[in-house]
Length: 432
Image (cartoon, rainbow, N blue to C red):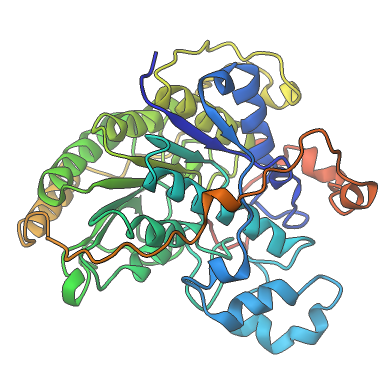
């Protein structure tokens, strides 16, 4: 059993949003994940919260006022009135306008913000928000299926109490929005392990992007090639994170667990197993530093749910059966109905031992350029953006009105797991 207190955030409505027909990002994966967490009984060992919903004011802690104002006002019905704004804010094909867009942003961002506040107030050791981790959103625009960068907003809140925050990203895509937000400061170190090259989205994340001014050498990028497997990934991840912990000594860690780095992902090209992905989470946890764990990318819905459920069990030190319990979405997990299906791919591993050694050495050389654990002149702590006393917990005995439910009707195709045989769609820019 775990002696750590784990706060887990889930809004029952967050899985009901729909980006549109054929779009690879499916918030429905969050409903599958939560259903597995419930049916494995993991919820009994955590503090479960229906999270706060972020306001425009909360989002403007990072994003520009005019961008957030646009997100609040645009709808599928009035979209023709926003033609200029759509291109200006990069909203369109990859980041479509869908019903309830601002509500969706409010839910996943509010959960990350409340998770940060609970960590700051020592109300938990680990906070989990699988709906969060949307790491591509920029200050002035949407990008890569991400509209509001909940990670940056949560880290800004954590910095009120913590002198140094370490951000780790194991999504297959570079965590460009978070890196960009903290590129000039030494108070946040960003470490991203990602596919790089061949015009892979977002096209950033070269090893030589190291930060500028006070942030020079505090951005660490680990660019990888197609087909990396568990053994090679672990052999790189652990020594890099070990060195980062020794040099930087963060007092809080934010871990983005994008599941598109698994093998067989609809938009991915790595060959990690669910256990291999989870090994990274387990390794970060053992440093015993306050930890905020988030979701991110992941486009083969059934494997995303398996992965994040398994990682919830690792955070709890709770061994769960490979045989999936019966659940509301049981048919999604055919034909094997197991937690750990084979996710190895036929993609050739283009990462040679020499290349991995070169990357590891490059990271180590960059770390040697930084001052050990930069000191921070801390002033009076600003008030929490979110007052815990003011969070109104909805009455669980009051059902949503028929009108509310009607606004959340899922298109029938949301429940078709079309990524079993579907090739990657042309023209869709990759991810979270």
